[in-house]
Length: 252
Image 1 (cartoon, rainbow, N blue to C red):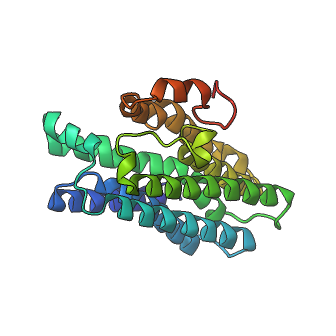
Image 2: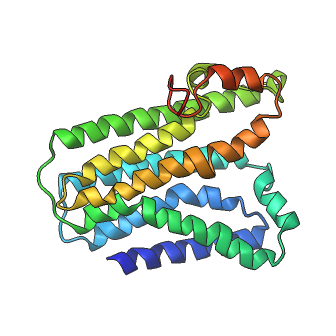
């Protein structure tokens, strides 16, 4: 099952890379992120030994999460050209095509493979009936989905107002954490992991929520975005009084 999913992810990211070459926009990889998990979910579900309620619930949750994210990113990036991060790499990298393939598409594919681990572990194995742990997982997922979708919507409305150009959003969920969307994304995967606990040996898939949480908080999420946010007026005061990731817990 490991190599099957790896091949599916590899093929999907190669497709994304080809599309990016044709349209000359590497930020298309962000649009492929959510649908990639839907593809992995559908494939592993079709290859699993049987269907049960846990597999159906998890598949529905991933479908809901992936479609919402794809629609949001499509609307956000429409007619805006290549994202500034990818454009900077296009302008500065030597051997741009090879580095793009490896450092953007294949690296993101590796993360997709690891983070989707609980999904295909559940779909490839048989578990018991739904339990309290699954209910806890649903609550955590729901809270994360709410944080992610509501904060994205609040940010989109904020940016639509020309008067807010160059300003920081400090209202709504953004009042309690500087990155409510990233926090919500992490919760989503901790919720999915709870479902994996209902399958024998499913605890091992904890690598998925750990990787996405550490990546968002310490590597490519918060640190990278705050390099640009730090240039906006009022940033120091906002950062001083607002938690970075987990609401109300400033050191996180």
